[in-house]
Amino acid sequence: MSTRSDLLRQTVVMVSAILAIVGSFIGSGAAGGTSMQTASGGAFAADATPIAPDGPAFAIWSVIYLGLIAYAIWQFLPAQKTDARQRALGYPIAASLVLNAAWIMSIQIDLLWLSVPVIVLLLGVLIRTFQLTLLSRPKNLIETIVADGTVGLYLGWVSIATAANVTAVLVDAGFEGFGLSSDLWAVLVIAVAGLIGVFVAVYGRGRLAPTASLSWGLAWLAVARLTGTLLSTPAAIAAILAVAVIVIVTITVRARAPRSAVPRLVSA
Image 1 (spheres, one colour):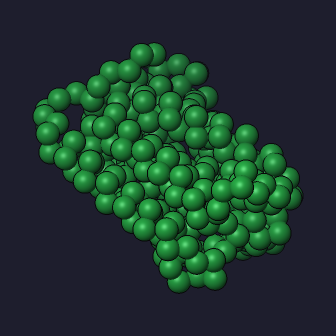
Image 2 (spheres, one colour):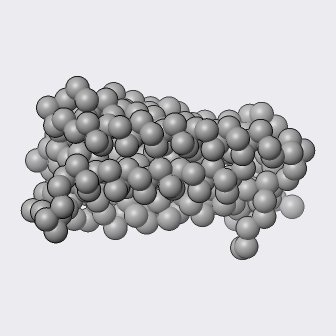
């Protein structure tokens, strides 16, 4: 039965999507703001830390935002108003959109330290949202793309972005790595990102979207370390190996999972 709370949920998702898009325009520098690569003193530039991906990697935000807009519009249609799956996904997705805008603004106003708790909270929300997509199967191809696909891409990219963000803040604060070399730190962080990718692949039964976006970020990280001004062959090799392992595990898990099986249930 349709209720006022359903309309409220749909409206909140739509407004949050608009807010996130406005934030993305500011973050791109197109609306008078400073681009993310040059904001906060260039802390997120491709040569700022050994974990920073090359500039073209950030083009994936366009795909993610397109998916989020598509979801906001699709979930507003009457057919989705009382859908139990959208009732579960709506507010978490809206929360991720608000946090996304807050993350961009924290960097735009040079509160670099604030960007860490915001993006960590964003990652936590996306992990929970991804879990919710595993509770039941999407009804059709459209839902698979705009809901599950978008959430998966979002999660994969924010996973590598969180590692890059934390590293950028530590470097900006003068962290010297406890005497360990920057190459070793880079390899360790990339290894953790790779393990996260493997876990998501197994837990998500071989879902392609998280693997695609996480691998995209790691691949451009390798490009930056091989061709940019901050060169690091160990970091590049580690990133390439991480991509290979994540892709192989994803394909293997996906091939072995029964096509008709309902995605695993997780505790509420």
